[in-house]
Length: 190
Image 1 (cartoon, helix red, strand yellow):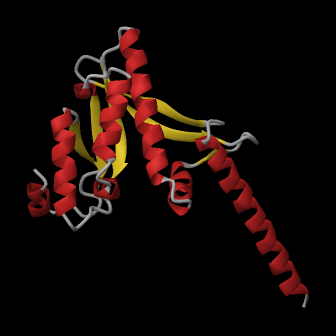
Image 2 (cartoon, one colour):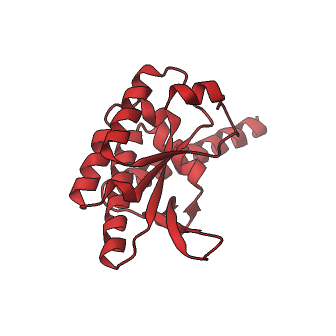
């Protein structure tokens, strides 16, 4: 019986850690943040000038432990917080872009979206609200779509992409060639 008792105790400890992790993440979305966007500069090779930055998600828990982005995004999905996360992401990116412009720094900010985000018909509205709230020129935002799980059903995706184009943001595919990205499929998305 000893190995089973140890196994159950380990499972209970794991369950308790997961509950605490989830509780902290819920709190982070309630304003007790710790969620941050770090900017990774994009440098033009020829001039050495910073022409943009990619917003990278980071989270430092209350205990000082940094959570890897894949683990954090998996937890966001598990808790059903993707929509809340996207709202936070767009507002935060808008605020950063606004503050950069106020400081005289005019660079394009890149934001990562998953291909599955293109199934959410509210994404263009959320981005539009953030741009309007922070008075950000849409041309200063690039949406980088991770194509590793490119959605197959294009009807709703095409509508979302069209609405994003109408906002004036630019769209690119991140990590092109590492997942599903047939050229014929990409032509459909033009």
